[in-house]
Amino acid sequence: MLIQKSNHWQPILQELQTSDFLAGFYHSAIAHRLRIAVWRFPNEQKPNAIVDLSGSHDTVGINLAVLPAGFLVTPFANQAENSSYLIKAQLFWDGTTCAFLGDLAGNERIIENKRRMLHSIKEWNHNHRNDSGKRPDFPRWFRGRTQDAETFEATEDQYWSWVNEAVRQIKSKRLRKVVLARNVKLPLTESFDPLILFQDLCRHYPNAFVSVVALPGIGTWIGATPELFIRLHDHELTTVALASTQKVSDEKKVVWDEKELEEQEIVSDYIRECFLQQNIDTFDETGPETLRIGDLLHLQTQFDLKLAAENGIQSANRLLQALHPTPAVCGVPKAKALEFIREREIQDREFYAGHLGPINFHGRTNLFVNLRCLQLQGNSAILYAGAGITRDSIPEQEWLETELKLNSLRAFLDNGPASEPRSEPGIKNRERKVLCEQGI
Image 1 (cartoon, rainbow, N blue to C red):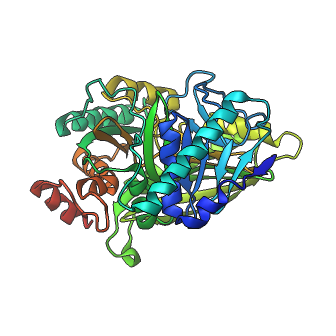
Image 2 (cartoon, rainbow, N blue to C red):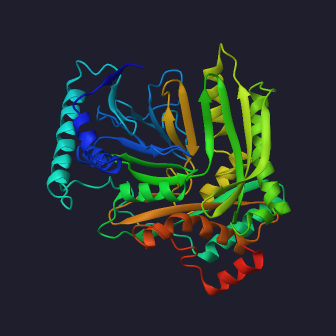
């Protein structure tokens, strides 16, 4: 990886706090319609950000052996051969310094976008020095492709009917598990800023992967996901089975019922089967253990394995294809679960339950399942959440599980800057009673 450090940025970096520089970096990319990704790894402090200076709108196939360093975004229904989006890491900020990655010489478009970015950052810095309340009138995000289309939200009755039909098919052994998702559309205040939400999520969910991804013509997504998809470094690969949800009460008394244990084991079984299909029979398994993300608890089993040196990247590519989408977001059998989802769900999942993350940075790839996320529209946000359905599922409880997951982001939008997000926004009296009866 060729790294070209830039001295042009250092005076600006020295004058601005991290959050102020990140704001200028982000809004400058949006102003010039360049792809940008901002992220913060679990249990780390500094954010990272990259901008693709090429102005590319292409999609790519997933091949870690040939893709350059960047940030990969893959939709839930990744059926086409080239349906992922790659934000190339041509301009990279690691929370301390800025650098250009790769050989940018001779590409006039990249050089011009580099010049524009630097000019905009300087403009942002100038306004910050002279008037802390003044900012350039930059656009704040790229609107989603469905901005002018009607947003479909499942009613409680609709969702219950999906769950009942799923349980019926599971009991008839057509399905073993299926994940049913829904969304809600919420208005945004005039002062809403994606970077402020990003910073709020980083503070409130320190062990989540927090990200903002903006693709011109595609949209802007923000999330704080609990679920690792694939971590790869030096032929060592890690993936997890994460499923089941309950609200934090007293962690010393956490009890997982048979339905929740079964749901998590289905995901673990699927991962083991994928390993066997790739002739991988040696791996370490840890768990299931309780994982806390914010006010929610999940069950997680971690799998670690060593890939062969001669064809490890090819094995990783095949595992990526086989695992996505996992039973944690889709179901088992995969094909029948996908069919069931397409026939029932009335919204397009788009990037919800897909995967995203930085790839090929100094030989490291970290991809996460895109959960606890929202998509920005013109003056609103669409929030997504799902619940795993098994033979013992009760429609009312599955609806409440999606409510708990939606609340992890909804509270921030309801209250503006989320210093103290509400614990139960929007829960009706009858639903409160059920929560109490369940002990959550």
